[in-house]
Image (cartoon, rainbow, N blue to C red; front, side, top):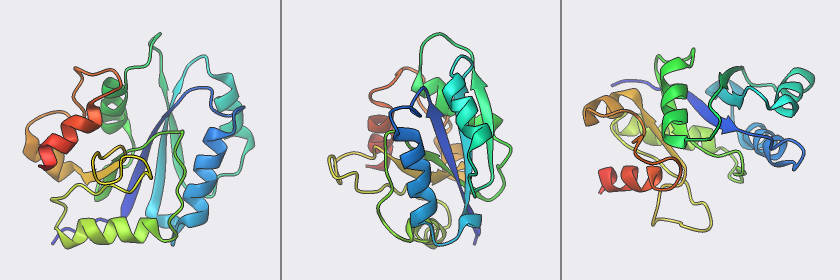
Length: 175
């Protein structure tokens, strides 16, 4: 059985510091985790987003992370998540994810629960959490493995969609 031991939080973000969204999300990741070693954050920052660059340089984030840079003029979440998937440093035995900088973790021990669910199914599963809006209808956040992505024969995210429907594609795969 593959033992997945880390969740790679793929986090595209753009100018969400001043609004408080990015700090709130990062703080909630840390506050609700059972073990910070279970987490790794791969930020994807637009090259002109100086507030996020400053935030990462001036804030102590007690989780290992890296920052990648996106230089396209417009956001395209399908391509952005694929860029994160391909370019993150952490690949072995880590869970990949699709989350947003406008989210907030509220479940204590979410990291342990996600890793347990993934390991229980030997990595051949998609785990998603209740977002208090879509609930079970749509995986607006998701956690899976490179092994499962490989079994689809497709990229991590469908690049036909710039924002909406990338989660719908995964929901279709799940069903």
